[in-house]
Image (cartoon, rainbow, N blue to C red; front, side, top):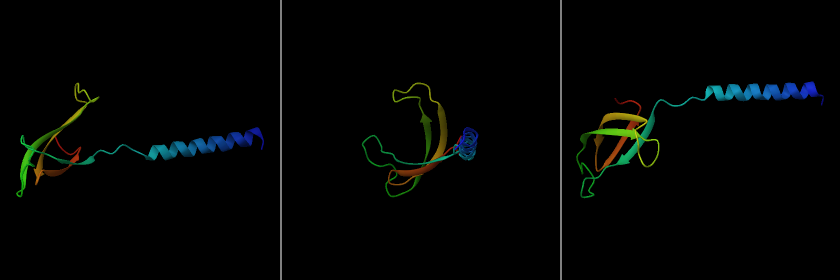
Length: 90
């Protein structure tokens, strides 16, 4: 295999890799499920659905700091369980 042919093969492979990565994008939303408890460790809304205003935040590290992202939604909770799509709130 001569040098120019090897170069073309490598160049073609790199071009294919670049186009493959260009198709991948970051999603606008993330599905999230959770469980919420009251101050006595009982699930919120046992048996009957209820709506709660919830604020979700992403922090730069586990110790906190200023949030990198914040969103508030009205979330329906039943037996302490809820499901939201983050990225669709305020």
